[in-house]
Every structure is written in C-alpha cells, then in structure tokens.
Image (cartoon, rainbow, N blue to C red; front, side, top):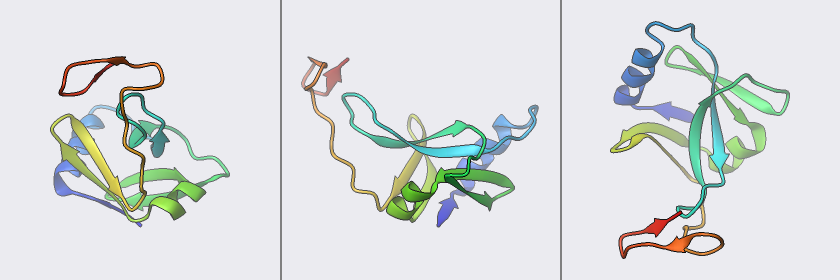
Length: 108
C-alpha cells in the first residue's frame, strides 16, 4: 500500500504543471554516509514492478521492495520528499569510504 500527503501531492502537481506526466518510481537508494533510503525518480515500469495509481499519478515500485516496505507513505520533509515505510534500514555511519566530518555528521 502507498499513501501520499496532501502537501506531497501539491508539490508533485506543481512539478508536472507544465510537463507531461510520467511514471514516478519509488526505489531503494543505497545511499552514502546516511545509509540506504527510499527515493523518488521519474521512470517507466518494467515486468518486475507493480504500478499503483494514486492521486492522479502512476507510482511504480519493484514488487519485492513493495512487499518488504509496505505501507509506504510519501510526505514532505525539510529537504524535499520524505518516504517512510515499514522497511528497517541500517543506519549510516562514517565508514567505508567516508571521511570523518564534524560532530553533526559525515563528510563524503
């Protein structure tokens, strides 16, 4: 199941206001210092995907990811879209190729 907040829908509507609508992929980004996270990108569905029509848009997500992450909620955060789900993701850290940054986080 995928849900979207009113604020996120308004932002997607605004993005497509002067563009042709296309499918929006929900995907697992492996990340860097912050660790993996769910993200959004414009992309077409493949045979490995499930398509979900929601709020006038076609969201596509890989079938296994949807099964593991449901429910997925799309909202807005301070830095743009924020996706939350039942998926337990490991927390990032300053290892494996990242140099130590300030006490507030990593510098990659």
